[in-house]
Image (cartoon, rainbow over all chains, first blue to last red; front, side, top):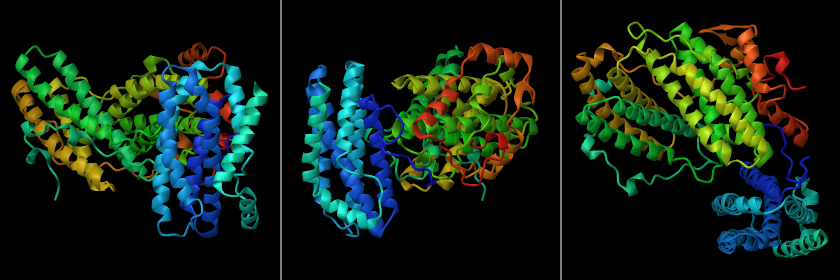
Length: 197
Length: 399
C-alpha cells in the first residue's frame, strides 16, 4: 500500500452536508480498517482492531438512530427495507460482540474477521442500494444536512484514528466496552437531532 | 507440445447446454482475489459479448433460415458462456470498483498486445490508445477515493501504476481522425488479427459498460465523468475496429472470432491462479473448439476456402496479464503529446483537433479536470500510485 493516508469521513474537507455521501465514505473507512487489521500483526493488529470495533459500533448506532427511523416513514416500503437492514446488522453485531474482547492472536480470530467483513460489506452495499437511494430521492437538502450533522456527532464519541499503543490501552479503558459506547453514541445522536429540529 | 485448436475436438454442441445450477457460479472475493483473475473475467466477458453481437449481425444479414438456426444454436451457448463468466464478478462490488478493474484491463491488456504486436502501424495504434486508458484509470481512481474513501490500489494491487497519462481532455478528437487504416488480410500476421479483435471487443464492452452504468450514479461529478470517458470509448471503438480488414468475408470473420476465443481461453487457462475460475476457462475452451469447427464448416461451404488459409499454423504464444510498468513509463516519456491526423499521428494540435476541442469543452473545464479539482478540495492532494518513481514526464509531476 502507498503512504497516502485517506482520512476518515468527517476528517476530510468535504462539506458533509449530505448524510448519504458521508455514510458511503464511512463504509469505505470501515473497509480500509478491515484491510489494516488483516495486514498487520501483534500489538498493531490489536490496535487496528480496537479502532475497527469502535468505528463499526458508532457507525451502526448512528445509522439506527438517524437514517433508519427516517427511512421507515419517508417512503412506501421503507418499513420493510429497514427491517431487512436491521436483520443484517443484528448478525454483524452479534459477531462483533463475540469478538469485542478477543485476543487478535487467537487462532479463530482471522476466520471470524473474514466472516464479519463479508457480513458488513454485504450489509453496506444493501444499504447503499436499497435504502440510501430512497433517502436521497425523498429527503430535501436540509434533512440530508441535519442527518449528516447527527452522524458526525456520533463519530465524535469514539476516536478511530491510529495512535501509539500506550495511549490506546488508556483510551480503551476510558471508552469501555462496545455496548456502553453504543449507548453513549445514542445519547449524542439524539441530542444532535434534537438541536437540528 | 503446441496446441492446435483445428486438430482438437471439444464437447459436442448438443451437450453444451447448462442448467441453472451449473450457471450459478461462485463469484470471486473482491478483497482477496488475484487482480488479474478479475481482469481475465472482464476480458472474456467482452469477448463473449462481441461473439453474441457479431453472431446477431451475421444472422441479420443471412437470408438462409437453416444458417440462422445454426447460428442461433451456437449463440445461445455463447450467451450462457457470457453469463457464467460475467457472473463471476461479485455483487458487493460497486460500479466504480468494477470500472477501475476495466481500466486495469485496458492498460495491461493493451500494453501487452502493443509489446507483442509484430506490425509497426498496429503497434503504434495500441501504444497511442493505452496512454489514454492509463489516464482514465487515474481519473476514476481519484473519483473512487472521493466517493468511497477507498484507494484504487486495493483493486489494482500495485500491479499497475496510477498516475496521469495523456490528459483525458485531449482525447476528444474530430471523429474522422479516429479512423485508422486496416491491416491487409492477405499479408497480416495471424497474431495481428487476433490482437485487433481482442482489443476491439474489450473496448466495445467498456463503452457499453460506461454508457449503461454511468447514469446509475447520483453524484454529479461521477455522472459527468462517465459521460466524458464513455464518449472517449466511442472513439476507441472507432479507432480499433478500423484496424480490421473489412474485406474479410462474414465467414472468415466468424472463424477469426471463434479461433480467438480458443486462443484466449487457452491462454487464461495456462495462467489462472483461482482453481474454480480455471475450471471455467477449461470448460469454455472445450466448448469453443466445437464452435470453431462449426464456423470452419460454414466457411468451407460458403466461401469455398479452407480456414487454414487464414488462420495461424499454430496457436501463438499465450496472451498474458502481467505488469507492464516499465513499458508504460517509456510511452509516458515519449508519446504523451501525440494526437491523430487522418490515419496517422502528429505532435502538434492541428486545426480540426482544436475546433472540436473548442466545441466540446465550450470554454469550460471538462469533468476529467473538475474531478481532480474536487478531489483536491477534499483531500488537499491527488491520488496516485507511483511505485517505480516519479512521473517520467516532468510536466506531469504533482505540484
